[in-house]
Structures are given as C-alpha cells and as structure tokens.
Amino acid sequence: MGGEVPIYDNRKGPYGPHPPTEGETLDAFAQHMAAWQPVFITLATVCATLAGLLFVAISLHPANRDEAGKTNLRRLAEHTFADFLLVLFIGLFFSVPGQPPQFYALSTVLIVAAGTREPAQRILEAWRDRTHAAHRMHFLRRVGPSLLGRVLLLIGSATLYLHRADGTQIEQDMLWFFSGSLVPLIAAMRNAWFLILQEAT
Image 1: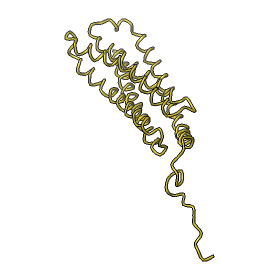
Image 2: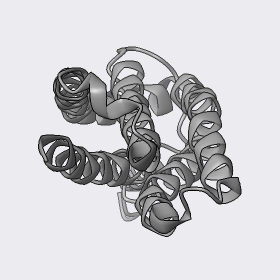
Image 3: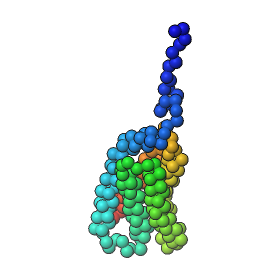
C-alpha cells in the first residue's frame, strides 16, 4: 500500500528497454526501404530513358564515330552510357521488396565491381593514347565524378552490412546509396548534353 508502483520505462531505446530482436530489425529495415524504394524506382526510370535517348542521339551520327578527332568523345559516350546503366541497376535492385540488408549491400558491391571495369579501361586508354592527347585531360576530368559516386556506393554497402543488426542506422546508410547514385547520374546527364551538342556540330 505504501510503496510506489514500478512504472515500465520504454524510453531507453527505439524498441524499449530490451535490444531489438532480428525480426524487429528486419521490420524497421523494411519500413525504411518502403520509403526509399520510390526514389530508386524514379532513378531507374530516369536512367533508362536517358540511356535510350543517348543511344539514339549517337546512332544518328554514325559517321562521326570513326573520325580521328572524335576518339575521346567516343570514350566519353561509352563511359556515360555505363554510368546510366550503373544507376539503372542500382535502382532496379533496390526496388526489390522484402530483402534483408545483406542483399542490397552485396548487390551494390557486385554492380559497382562490374561497372568499374569500363571506366578503368577508358581511363587507361586515354592515359596511354599520345595521339589524341589534346582532349585527354578534359575526358579524365569528366570521369572523376562517376568514380566518386562508385566510392560512395561502396561506403554505403559497407555501412549497411555492418549496421544490418542496428535498425537505427539504416536511414543514414541509405543516404550513402542515394548520394552514390545521384552523383554519377548528374555527371552522366552533363556528359550526355555535352555529347549531343558535339555530335550536332
């Protein structure tokens, strides 16, 4: 009668006074992913559309492809198309519902690994090509942002994999993926516009 009734304190963490179970963590992750998936679907749609437009624009000027002065433009076009495909596949994989964090983290690593071969090859070609050195540095500067995007995606993969048991860190981890997708997308749009202008001249 004289003692105080103990009050249940649920303010010690987002899941109450006990650590979150695996099921609770997956539920929290699913809720965060449901909020982010429209963003990645939009990114995939935009990249698919722009990649198609770039392909058509380049195909309309087949004679320019083999000109000696267009070598670095061809390299930039191939690299830009690869950037669109990179963000497209990121958007497609992140649109798959109901998967654990490991699925998105490892998928991103595989996509980035597969998509890094192309820019590495183009950079190596441009660096070794003494014949078309006049525009080589311009090409290399335009490749830089897409490489930064790949680094951001790998950071997001690492943090998501390490935080897979901590539902409170998921939102911050997803920002890495968003930034890593947005940077190469903006760079690819800028390059595509430059290529279309060059092909029109």
